[in-house]
Length: 233
Image (cartoon, rainbow, N blue to C red):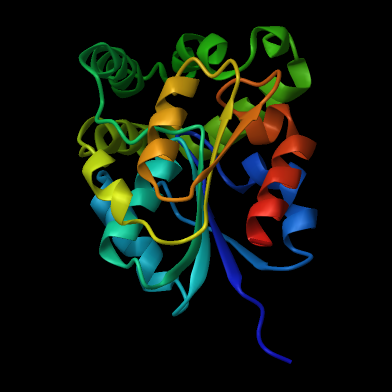
């Protein structure tokens, strides 16, 4: 029996493997699943290099939000190692000035001992309007935030601000690619997903209904089905 392929999942800011708990059982039916370390480095290049040092010779790769930035950097550095790619609720564009201003404000809060206040600045932009009052969902997000901690959060914000424009490298991607986005994603909206899907040859665009930026948490079954279809291509 041939060994199973590894699927490496890269969460976004303040998130960890719990982000994918709604997909894990389905994904593990066919793949060995690993969660990349997204908390130890302050730039996207270092995050990608850390992932590659721990990765097998060949693997599937999926990243959400900041995890997508890392995944695109991995594709630039080691395209022959990645068998397929999923970009979830992310963008290939560099950080915009208004986004940088928000990040500087959150960094200042975290550095000033008010890390907990950053959640209020993020929550309404993270999820679909219908999910903003979902206390169970919010508790999951807060739990992952607390496990991340202020120092890692600051590193993540600095990494995101300094990321490059990935759009020029997208046409070189030559593996089955899923581009998935929540239909009400306010952070990386549909137009960004469409842009990536149009630039990556043969990419499949999947728009998740009734979801914001955290589609794996907000619509776990729909995302699981989309990822399983992608893994079977």
